[in-house]
Length: 328
Image (cartoon, rainbow, N blue to C red; front, side, top):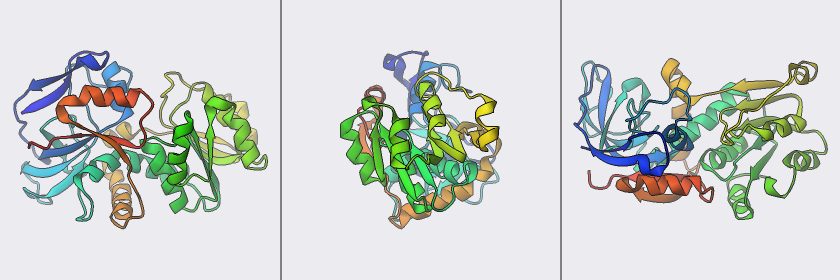
């Protein structure tokens, strides 16, 4: 089979198409014939050597995959060859075939395409977990979503609305992305390149602040998060796209009953994989019922993974980017 491999940490030129043997499923695993794989920012960070718990080169990147069951390992009774599935693979998804544990594999509803299934898995489950299990969003609360026109952002806006948020605010870095965030559920959209988003949030909430913040940026933005976080508010820190960590003094938390909470999809997949199934089933049901839209801004042939990474790194993309494996 062919696989797109990170041959060394570095730029997009380290992504090379390599011939590899088709993997054999072990006990409790299935082999998936790949139809589509999602491109996530964590793939870029893994390629650069900046992703926590990242593999050492050479490795196949990719966090989520959609395709058909090609073979099953010993003890597998819940999936059969030919079945349409979406999964968090064991060894990357940028390849013609990949393996996945049964516990991290899910049947695709008939009304969901391979493209939508691949595009939605990581971003929708991450968003759902952040809003339900991490921050415990309550009906009527105000929510701030950073990178609101991106893959997680466009989904998190919709899910916040679905879960009963009273006001949903999104931040973007370009004027042309404001309409995208609006179209996916933001009541207020702030372009942080025009000034302090914290000041704009306070103005939009009559100086109350927001109750929940989803932060994948950290760095300097984290301090501004604290400036517009209401009493009893919660920040979910789940990334550092800025390349820098954020810092908080404990004195900024206890007197106001505010919290900073961490989340990692990778750690959850490794250590609490069974806990993800309820969230996966919830978002798949929403998508199957047309209650959750997954915008796909671009699709690239499998061999053009480097172009897909460049497009994502350009910060001009919106929604999701896919790699397609149409020849298998």
